[in-house]
Each structure stands twice: as structure tokens, then as C-alpha cells.
Length: 145
Image (cartoon, rainbow, N blue to C red; front, top):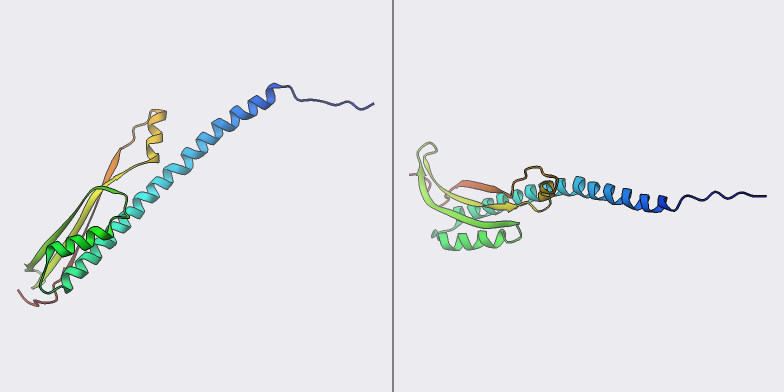
């Protein structure tokens, strides 16, 4: 005669509760580093946009700040920035280098998405971080000050 042992009816419910608790913890552990990765990626996009803008400003003759600002703004559309600003400085003399330089700066706020999960636990978490990058290059059409 075979004896069959059955699990109590509460073990299925217990497994569901345990899975739910562990799954929420797993999501928090995986999402928060992903959020920092997105912030880092946004910083790289902003750096590339400022570098390309500075290169465009250095090679443009005659210098047109509005056109450069438009081109840089197009390049940061894919970045996850709010309140993005682009600053283009006209060619100025840099006394230490003895030549004219142009400068392009891009800055904006990156809003954390998943990092806010820490607030549910009661831990302090920032809403956003300001990402700012500036690139300076030699203006190619005026060699000396």
C-alpha cells in the first residue's frame, strides 16, 4: 500500500508571499544601478554634444552662435535631461595659450526614475542631479590674440 504525502494547503500561499517579497527586493536591487547607468549615459551624451558643438564653433567662419546652439540642442534631444541649456561663448583671447578659443557648455537636470524606490523604504533619495559639461577649443580662423 502506497502512502501519499500532501503538502498542507498553506504552503502554496506561503510560496506566493515569499516570491512577492523577494521579487520586489530583486527589482529594487536591479533598478537602482540601472538608474545610475542611465545618469552616466546621459552625462556621456551631454559631453559628446558639447564636444561636437565646440568643434563646430571652432571651424565655423563667420561665427554664428545661434546656429551652433541649434545644432547642439538637436544632439541632446535623446539625453534624459530637463531644463537643458546650451551656452556658446564667442571667440575670445586666452592669454595663457596666446590664441582665440571658443567654448560650448551644456547643462541640465537628470531626474532619477527608479532611485525613488528608496523613498518607499524611508531612506532619503535625491530627486535629480545636475549634469554639466563644457568644452573649449582653439578658434581656427584667428590664430593669435
